[in-house]
Each structure stands twice: as C-alpha cells, then as structure tokens.
Image (cartoon, rainbow, N blue to C red):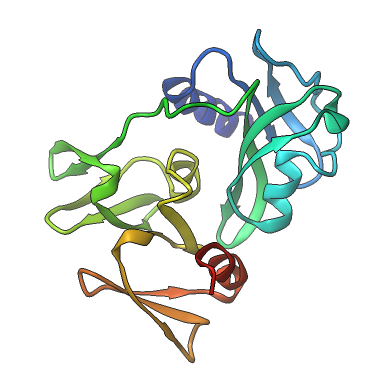
Length: 216
C-alpha cells in the first residue's frame, strides 16, 4: 500500500471516529501503520506481524468485516475491534482496523450523502437498498433516488451497521431488509431479488458467510 493511500484513508477516518480510537493498517502479513489513542494502545509497531486472534487476523482470514471483542491474551490488553479487509479487483491487499477500549455506541451519522449531477443528498442508511462498485466509486440505490458516494465499497463498508448490511459479492453490499427472495442460481451460488426488482448475485466467496449470517 502506497503512503499516499494510507494518508487518504486516515483523512477519511478522522471525519468519522472519535479521538479515543486507535487505528491500525496492515497488509496481509504485517502492520504498516499504527496510530494509538490515549484510551487504548496495543503497542503495535510498523513491521509487527499480524497476531492470530486479532481483529485484523479475523478480517483477513474470513474476508469479511469483523466487529469483535478481543481478549487480553492477544495484545496484553482487551479491546473492541472493527476491522475490514481492503480488497482490490477481488484480491485482499490488507486490512484497516479501528480499536476501541470497549464496544462503541452508535456514533456515526445515520446518513450517507450521495452526489447526483451537481448536488449532494443525505440519505438515511435504512433507505438504502444496495451499494455497488462502479468506476472506483460506490453507486447507492434507494427506492426513490440513486447516486454516487466518493468512497469505494470496501472503505464505506466500515461505516455500515453489520446487522443491516451484508457483503454478498466483491461488487455488492445489500440491505437485508430489502431482500425480497433468495434463489439458487447456476451462475453464482444464490441470486437475490431485491424489493425494487434488482437481481444481485451472491458469489461463491461470500456464500458461506451469507448463509451463516442469515441462518439458512
């Protein structure tokens, strides 16, 4: 990961997380950036290997966003981690992890702002049907409006509620509330029929996680 990419990610993160958040960025083997907070410090140094059992390790292993309480036997202090793999063109390149002293209460805005033509519109998260990767931006679809968010899908995934939104494909995140039907499909593992009529594939890579999350 290039230094400029790390700098851009950190600029985005500063807008969303409170000051008591430590941030770790890793490739698939070791940490490449760490910013501790006054509330919790895991004493990570760039070049340190990713420890088994850590939030970053779980995100990289499962290829999914992880929200997890991590016991003190991993880093010597307990913490609550939110980690998401960074995926480019279907390949996992690393992970970004937000580290809290305890499970955070909802502190992020419940709106996602999209650009339509030359204007911006705030949309409540619960109105979003699905999000799709398009031209290095994220296409956001609701029943009444559609537009683009400046973050890519993997970066934006970090800020979505895991009990409502689920990654089903490298190009799609769907709002579970808007799934009308789940069908078997010969071209992918499943096919989702959304309430607006959109047909979205569940790829083989995400099928097990998808089934486990929805309990079928």
